[in-house]
Amino acid sequence: MKQLKCACLDGLDATCVDVEATFTKGLPSFSIVGLASSSIQESKDRVKSALLTNEFKFPPLKITINLSPSDLAKSGTHFDLPIALLLALQNEKSVKFDDFFVFGELGLDGTLKDTKSIFVLILSLAQRGLIKNVLVPVSSVEKISKIPNINVYSVKTLNQAIDFFKFSNKENSKNIFDNFEYNSVEVHKKKYFYDTKYVLDFTDVKGQVLAKKAALIASAGNHNILFEGSPGCGKSMITKRLQYILPPMSLEEILEKAKLDSLDIVEPDFSPLRVFRSPHHSSTKASIFGGGSTTAKVGEVALSHNGMLFFDELPHFGKPILEALREPLEDHKILISRVNSKVNYPTKFMFVGALNPCPCGNLLSAKKECRCNEVEVTRYKNKLSDPFLDRMDLFVIMNEVSSNDLADVTSSQLHKRVLDAFVMQKQRGQTQLNGKLNDEEITKYCVLQNESKEILDKAVENFSLSFRGINKILKVSRTIADLSMSELILKSHLLEALSYRKR
Picture 1: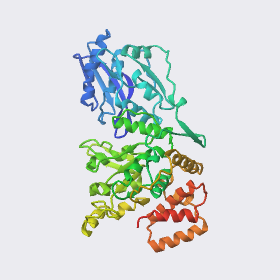
Picture 2: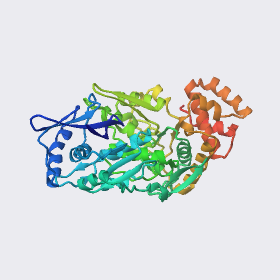
Picture 3: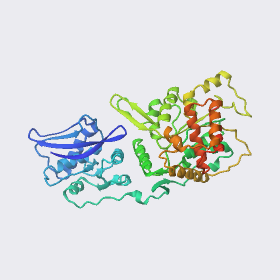
Picture 4: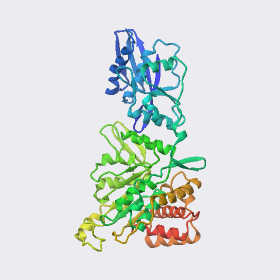
């Protein structure tokens, strides 16, 4: 019996699969067992055609292909190549597959094709140190070669793959990240990459000085933020520009983003621009959090990991969606359970919400009359529960647009300040940005000046701050201190953080 290594997706992660082949006496047949889906069962015809086209003769034996472990449901056309290799090399006693993983879809003439799942599978295996050598189609190399610490070998056809294992002249590809073209900062011998192309620039935003300062704080510390203001005051305009001034990304985060892009059936670009997701308020709960009748699939919350999730017209989202959002915002992970699968995925994203002050939007306007009565305003506000609002770090009420408003800052200037604050956080030894620190890390890194401690004690007493509320104030004030290049949280930093709390 010969066997090759392959893999399949189990939720968000890859599981190793041993592809085994036996040739026994009996009526000639070709069967695949091991909970193989229809896409794998169809591979029998593709494999037969590819082998016969290349002058391979099927033996008059009973051929059985087993995909182990047999209790795991498997799918994907990338099993074509390992199955074909086992059949083609059945009589080659000297051939050893060693620790090679093999992936690839076969054309009817024996050419090899890339599939959407190959990159995700190999990246998932590499992140856990389960893979070292891999053989893939040439069309897969551009993406796969960006994964560090693995040897990538490529072939164009089935015949080349057969010769690859018959002979020992193996040349692997080089890692493309060795000459990554983006700017970077280095902290503790680790590089973090960022882009300086500002497709949308803050020079377009006139006025709104307070909102832009809050946006800067949210970006530098990865804090959740809520903008409230009249229609057209610039809530969405500011939010869409936040993506370009977010902190730099490590190589691991860039690869994780590419993995999520592949799961979302989007071609990954491997840029250090953090992801921006903005679902419509009519989206279903399953599309936001992930779901499916039998297998759990990722939703917007998972796809926003290490990036931004923007809910425009926040109160118009369904109450169940907003309440279910509390868990990923607090615990930075979520578990989706279905009959046949359970998926636990990380959700460390920056949440941004935008809402009007009332249903008609003119409650705060000095020029337009509000058409809402008190009951309508109360009902509109009550769509956002206190436990949900308690997950927000910053609250900003935006002014109306004035003809005297001027553009006072560029995205480049804001991004420079974010980079400086990011370096400070990493130099302290933080693995997470300020907005995602846990209780132990808050005690360690959010060090208050003596005068600041007295102010915080008074604020707790006067404003009845909850334990979560105190931690939010400390984390925001830590980011404000970082933007001021201060090691300690001073009185001015704490007072500014208190000014952003929910009133």
